Length: 228
Ligand SMILES: C[S@@+](CC[C@H](N)C(=O)[O-])C[C@H]1O[C@@H](n2cnc3c(N)ncnc32)[C@H](O)[C@@H]1O
Image 1 (cartoon, rainbow, N blue to C red):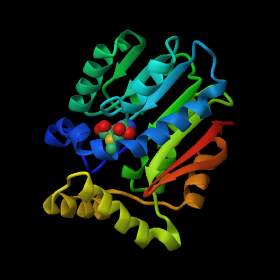
Image 2 (image 1 turned 90 degrees about the vertical axis):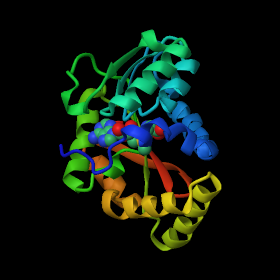
Image 3 (image 1 turned 90 degrees about the horizontal axis):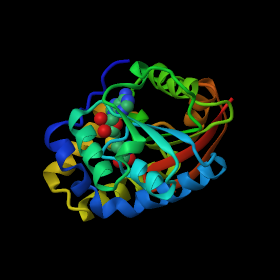
């Protein structure tokens, strides 16, 4: 798998939480509903958190499910070290295996009961790469195991208006004009926005069934699907 064009290192990593703090309510919806998608997981579930970043979804789930154990997959050293520190502070670090690298290099041991991949697959520009990414997740799940995926998406007829709203929200959250221009340039060169139908087809091709788009918060859409 090729490296994404955007690296989450240096300032991009150390300021990540602060930069998006005002937009956190959008993620709160995602966390709440992802947890409900996982309602049928066993009490001692193993959960794979792909692109764990600074640990937002992992911490949300770990604090609510004291028996669950997690594998956090994250290629950025800086994001992973912030994640590790926050997990330690929250007292959940001992239930997390930290894999500082890519998913394809994570040894396949026991299967996982559920998986998340939030705000990462849109960095895989080629459909083949993106399919391969979801396949790597599918291979590691129990049959029937749910995946919750969230990405920036293409909203077809509504896209232009929602994009304007999205950029307005970024301004509200404190992005300067210069940062906004950089963000827009990155969206064009390093992010692939696919439609709902394209995402569902990708998930099915990668070995998932019943892909369901259960949430849209401005430009972010979220899907659940079960491993076949
Ligand atoms: C926008 S952040 C999202 C972090 C977290 N999931 C969240 O919602 O806050 C994207 C993360 O994906 C990581 N990443 C980039 N390419 C990846 C890949 N191929 N596999 C796993 N993680 C990747 C980046 O290092 C970064 O931490």
